[in-house]
Image (cartoon, rainbow, N blue to C red; front, side, top):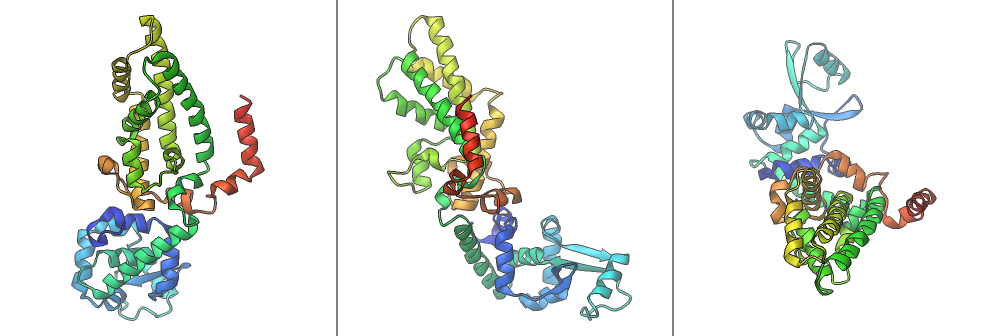
Length: 337
């Protein structure tokens, strides 16, 4: 996220999808604009003045980044919509005569989009710098200062971790019963499952997230990743049981490795594993500024729904969730199954 915003549409969109950051930016930057339909908009001429650039420069970006800017609120008013706008603004827009047939307007979000794109404007560069500062502040503030455990603010985290612990026991019991290998097998095959799901072992993952020796990897995993791990663990446990019964003995490590290779190419598991990789790679870059190089091909823009999930009013710290009687009731029902 701290890279040059002018070069990365994904990084720009990650910021623009974070409405909490955009609200704080609007409050602190006070860029002006025109009040219109309970929001603030800017005309092209206002942005020309704000960024101290030429109109042709704005037109260049409107041409080269048309879809991106439309997605973030740029629109062209015509006909009745244009008349309503000119009437509503009460003569504020003075650069357009009565013969104007079309007028492009930028929402605040679209104006910030332009600021993130402009390489010709020193004012835009200063605004980009302030935007990045505010985004970091907002994420830290709304996550309680602990982005390492931002995954736990998802209301799906607790049920997912509970289920994963259950399937983890099924898997470790299977290792104990069906694999002919010393106690080191638990660490070795935990890493092999991690590598199957997100292409990294525990040490690699810990280094990327800068985890301390006392930090547990699974405490930092998103609900979707925990579900993928649980699916693999449960499936492998059953496969080991069946294979061991067929052979009439415990499996050798090479035989379990064959089962793992088969699972890695299982078409039924592929959608859940691909989803876990996409969620981990995209969210960790967007929220934790952590790049999983082995998952770089899976990185996507963080959707607005994820900002609501992890930073919104419905998201709560793990301590707050555990203090909720309704959450505790859910766990009691899970335990009693």
